[in-house]
Image (cartoon, rainbow, N blue to C red):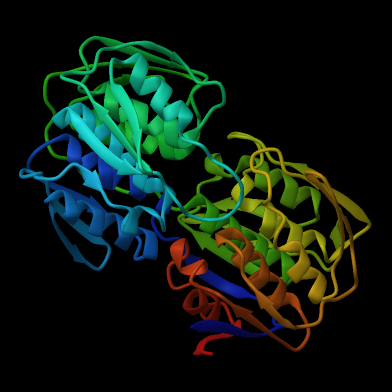
Length: 417
């Protein structure tokens, strides 16, 4: 087991390059199943979840070659439609193989997904939508088995704007017969990235980025040649890192249109946030002001930035409230922040954070991906030394995080326990 050791109290300064977005690269990798041929993806981050997706593609029969951040997938011969439990259990995004396999081959067998323990994220909306398109769905010993000679377009209303459900159904619809309308669709930038890639393959898609997506099915698609968008959550994490350490950091590749809610809240907290040609610069204030946030689907404040922003509010003047409205059970980092001196009280889906003057380094344990990032941020701002254990969560979503923080002047290293 590895851990990260942080000697805190240093002001971060300089520039850092944002990696490709994990939450865009994963559906794009599974979208290569839609068309035979050689697909080329650029700016693919080297992450644990990406490696899992590549192994899963190989299990289906695809050939996958990675050279640094370039990934080539040869998907002509797909000789298996089963996503086995041993791979799927570690990554929820594996369920995104369901739509592409079903619409191209007429059959898919995918284990029910696993991933971070941040609450129930059922795939019933994925299955309900596929059934509306004519698929026959069975649950068999922990597997979803779906069959359809050819999916047919349908009008589908999503009860909640699920990102994975929108992606899965959009990919299923591109080869379906007729027109599919997705109402109350998710609006996240990663949805737009996937739609742009699918259009480049010959798909007919309108409305991505809004709550209504219209897909006109086609008979066949061509391979993609596409570059993954920058990771807005990684960008946001570095922006908060600049603020929490009173630093001055240029986050290269960050796109303001992807981060409007976070930018507003950072400015409200006293940080100076400016757009530059290459990204976004954040200068932290001498003293932070307390800010209230409520997570909600895009364009609201992202749930994937809630834990990091809480670490920031721990050191702010006054009292802030943080309401989690997307996932239950996503305050597991609170106990670890309290070990470092944070004053936080939880009642249901709301945390009340009373700012303290300083944090003291301590041994802490990561419980999920974004909780890991919040503990690293707290450690960078804390006095003395912080040790973050169970960092395999961190490796699922951040590429070379400690190296990037060292570039900014942070004293942070990885070690074997």
